[in-house]
Length: 181
Image (cartoon, rainbow, N blue to C red; front, side, top):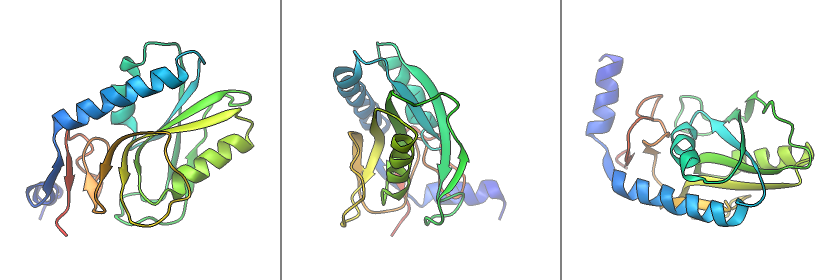
């Protein structure tokens, strides 16, 4: 099968978990919560590439206060469906020393990556490091971090869409899907 056919087969066999309307409502709510919490602090927002790009792109225009923006790239997945070794690909260029930092990510799965990012930024001198995730997966066991802002809670399944990929495909979907169990 071709790469296109493989990707289409994944989507065709998946279950819709959250509609595009539910996704949009969650982003609106998170934007309101962030505005209340950080609207008077001129924070540095750091988007975690590449999964958080869709969430970040939709969230930023809804924040009606000044921000500085940068990104970082840390991954445990690559194109795999299971987490592996944490790899730092790109550090933020903007200094974090003394700043209130908000890290924006696509999903809080096991929490290992986001916890490591938070610890790293605090060690680099951030005054405060908050986290916003589009989704939090209910994995049924403790995580090393809890997000300060969460859009949606998702079941413990392999999910994709809205920035989250499946084997490199379908980050561009406006809704959330899950592979069949």
